[in-house]
Length: 228
Ligand code: ADE
Image 1 (cartoon, rainbow, N blue to C red):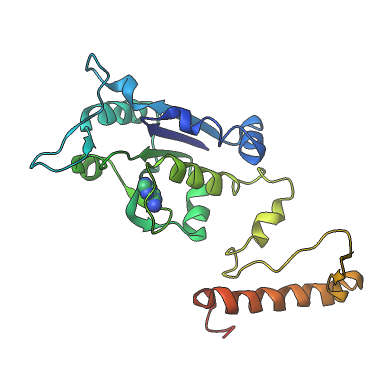
Image 2 (tube, protein in one colour; image 1 turned 180 degrees about the horizontal axis):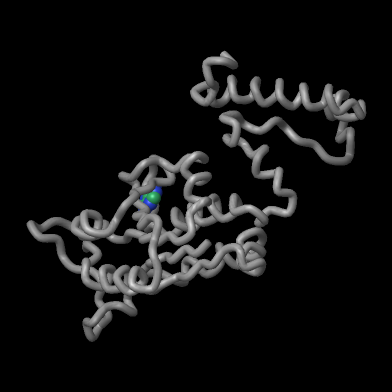
């Protein structure tokens, strides 16, 4: 899978893909992340990528030309499944969206900045608008990093134990049960007895029950009718 990220702050995206699972995914050749500096596509002598709003008002707007040039260049090289714009007014990201995006081959992600992008970028190029939550970040870069990470780890072969993504919170519409490691007792706090029983069936049932209880308590909106 190939993901091209378009940004005016490429430095912000150096670290998130250089560690742990994202690093391994790229080393294994399962994921390619290419970060493009939108400034490189500006023809202005000062490499300007933004301008004042028509109609007045505070804040700069990202201009269409450099973004269009970058997208056109990429589109001439390969076909993209989606061209995504990270924006707080997009559809809120969830696990189902991550699952389906992880099955695509090529994606472009555009990070917004300042007051946002010229609306015509959205009209002409953008096929999906995604928010990572109801709060406003300084720019789309951290949101793009969240999206790439949440998609990248789902690509088959990326996680060591392939089944582990299947048991993530949200994968089955439920939160994950609690987990414990050694010591079995810490300052008088013992782990649940069943986990030491060696009885796989009982442990599985306990994990399921805990997942249901946790979901009921914390995210009742996730529970399907059959469990309720
Ligand atoms: N850019 C700024 N805030 C954002 C958010 N919540 N989600 C996606 N992109 C953003």
